[in-house]
Image (cartoon, rainbow, N blue to C red):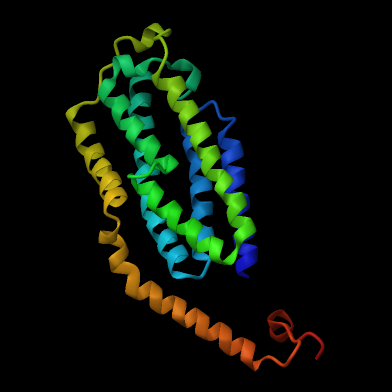
Amino acid sequence: LAPLMATLAVIGVLYGAFVAMVQKDIKKLVAYSSVAHLGFVMLGLFAFNVQGIEGGILQMVNHGISTGALFLLVGIIYERRHTRLISEYGGLSKVLPLYAACFMIITLSSIGLPGLNGFVGEFLILVGAFQTMKALTVVATSGVIFAAVYLLWMFQRVMFGQVTNEKNRRLPDMNAREVAYMLPLIVFVFWIGVYPQTFLRKMDASVTALVARIEAKRHAALSESPPGETLIARYFDVGK
């Protein structure tokens, strides 16, 4: 079951990445990047070792923080311009410096820049998965590269360059309410990235016990099978 689920996870990573790369709508791009991130989560969980499972759990938390923050940031600019098309923007860093700074931090965390939350989860997942599924892990690693491509492309198109659309010249920057709900998310981005042990320590005992139980059941099932009989044959009574 694990190889099948890991294969589906890698397909999810690549599918999400490829579809995200052709999006013209910021919100849709973020949504498909979310598909790729959850593919990484599945890959870690089905590695069935401590690093993979802890990385998968932590990456679920990271996904909620980073992707949730990206959706909030998209909502902030949509509230001002009522469009999510990338082509409608450009040069926003000159008009909305605080918004651009927040967008940059969250984008880099979603890419998995070292020192930010996304790196820790992805690194643990890849380390854990490589121990059991080397080829699939190598393929999944390309998803990290693709994520950097489409997210940085989107950020560059929206934030840099000249302000060519007159409707963007007088947009108000983030207000106190928007800063208030974005600041805690940014704090968690740096907290998990710099000191992940705060969160990993709380799951160590449970994950270690879970992996031990999985290994015990696997060894018991193998020892009970007659020589030459596979687990699939045993469960489906093949040959009886």
